[in-house]
Amino acid sequence: MRKILVAGNWKMHGSSSMVSSLLDGLLAAPRSESIDLAVFPPFPYLAKAQAMLAGSGIAWGAQTLNPLSQGAHTGEVSAPMLVDLGCRYVLVGHSERRTIYGENDEDVAARFAAALEYGLEPILCVGETLQEREDGRTEAVVERQLQAVLDHSGVEAFGRAVMAYEPVWAIGTGKTATPEQAQAVHAFIRDKIASRDDIIGGQLRILYGGSVNGSNAADLFAREDIDGGLVGGASLKAEDFLAIRDAAA
Ligand code: PEP
Image 1 (spheres, rainbow, N blue to C red):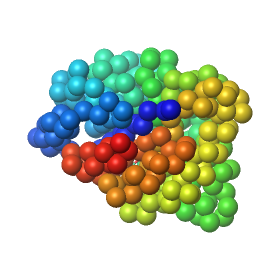
Image 2 (cartoon, protein in one colour):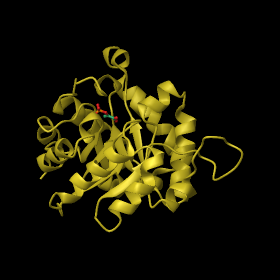
Image 3 (tube, helix red, strand yellow):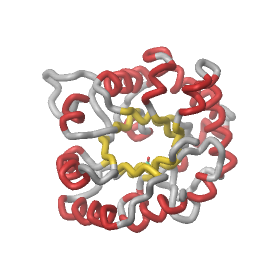
Image 4 (cartoon, rainbow, N blue to C red):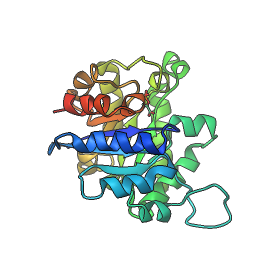
């Protein structure tokens, strides 16, 4: 049985006081032994997350990283820096990074490899646009995004990683994929990995992301291949985020 992971991607939201009260709210709630919780604040608040969450059982991670370990790259943040800040996870290939910041499949693969090299657990995000779904290309797009990482790092790497299926048309739109739509793609992803390595495929955690909230989470998490959620908007209020966690219980 894979342990559910509920991960909160705060994107470029927050302030020092908002982060304090949000994390206070999460820390005040009773812990759940059966569900992992993780938050992904913007870079400037990672040190606060480390100070407040250390020893709490709630993990934290970053929203992206540069694939290089150091150098003349103004504005960038490397894997060793994230390790220094106690991060366990890092998101790679989020659709906003792919579309707004032009990260292609090879860039994503390089970031995934850099995270693993330094002991971080990458959460590899994949997913199709609405046009791609309407054209019947969902599986082809997801397969292409996954293949780039497999080519670069090999299937063994997925033994130390998490995946997130995030249909682009469902992110921040209030339009959630139906549990059937999500389950179909999750099963497709698991099969791709399991066809290379049964055990790694069976153990891989695949999160669903795209307008998850307290009302739709239980139905999604009940599906065989959905092992948790990557949550944007609903992770910005402790009670909303905890409602999603509780839906998984
Ligand atoms: C996300 O940011 O990855 C996301 C899924 O956002 P939302 O939950 O707001 O759709």
